[in-house]
Amino acid sequence: MKFLHLGDLHLGKALSDFDLIRDQKYILDQILYIADKESVDGVFIAGDVYDKSIPSEAAMKLLDYFLIELARKEIKVFMVSGNHDSDDRLNYGSTLFAANQIFISAVFDGTLHRQRVSDGDTEIDIYMLPFVKASQVRHYFPDEDIESYDDAVRIIIRNAPIDKNNKNILVAHQFVAGKEEDPALAGSEGVGTQSVGMVEKIGYDCFDEFDYVALGHIHSPQRVGRDEVRYAGSPLKYSLSEANNEKSVPLITVSAEGGVKIELVPLKPMRDMRHIKGTLRELLDAKNVKAPEDFIYATLTDEDIINDAMGVFQQIYPNTVRIDYDNSHTREIEQVDISRIAENKSFPELIGDFYRLMYGCEITEEEMDIMRTAAREAGVINEAD
Image 1 (cartoon, helix red, strand yellow):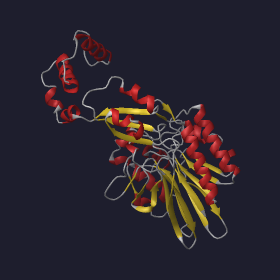
Image 2 (cartoon, rainbow, N blue to C red; image 1 turned 135 degrees about the horizontal axis):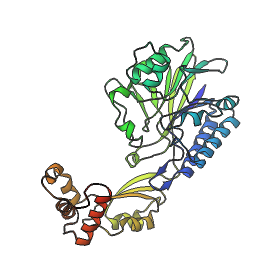
Image 3 (cartoon, one colour; image 1 turned 120 degrees about the vertical axis):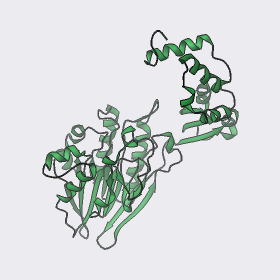
Image 4 (cartoon, helix red, strand yellow; image 1 turned 180 degrees about the vertical axis):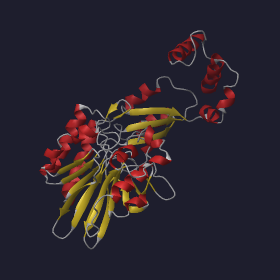
């Protein structure tokens, strides 16, 4: 039997000021094409289906479209909620969906829910674990010692009736780490994931009873501990730090005798995200311009700050997301000890020093007044300063 493993769709997400709904539909259509071409039996969706707990109308319509197309093709869906999802919203209509082979586990109720599928030769038990916190699990297992996420997930699995005679697959949305290192973050997972503490980490070995673990939560595709414990990654690049990453969808083939085979099928976005570097003249020279509709992160090496660089850039690259500089001024700033700069200096002195480092000249009184006003509104300085 064949399955596609998806995670972290983040439907409704925006990249800076740019709406990604068209890009997300494009990539979902590509996934539908792969599902047809490979004659897959099912699709795993490992959480963070939506980008926000209260999704936009466009995001809800896009998920509806995707699920309807999968149901029309008679492809089973196994979907769990992630930390970005509203459990109740994602769970709404789950009973009706189940009648169309769309199985949703969005609210943990003390049970690791299972769906059994078979093609006659291979029988597979697919377990679905929505995003859970230790506090939620304690409610259902009050006599167990549960201090961490790892404790919580191990207790859930220990109390699940797993039949070792069958092939077993788990779809889950958690922060899973290897023995010696954490998974590589993409940078777009959110502040909570990037600052995750030891209490939230789950050791990959707690999934030893499963033949394949379809994970969501981390946006960079990768294995954790062993090939069969895997993050699919987000299907699109959602941060500038992912500019050099290649996205893919794992195609999982499960057979009774052959075990689990994993193939990464490349995904090609409608608009790629690219990082380009050089002087403004070089980057906007007609012979160097390619794929102008892509999302662009530009690093300018010009020594002088260019007035309205974003406006100039967007005339050629309309989807420019960010511009920064790499020149002698910025490199000098990188070497500065910020803590020493701030010692015994007033706000005007600090701003004046920063301005000289950045622009090589003195700040005007008018510009200083603007900075004071902004600092007061932000609560950085008092009205009297």
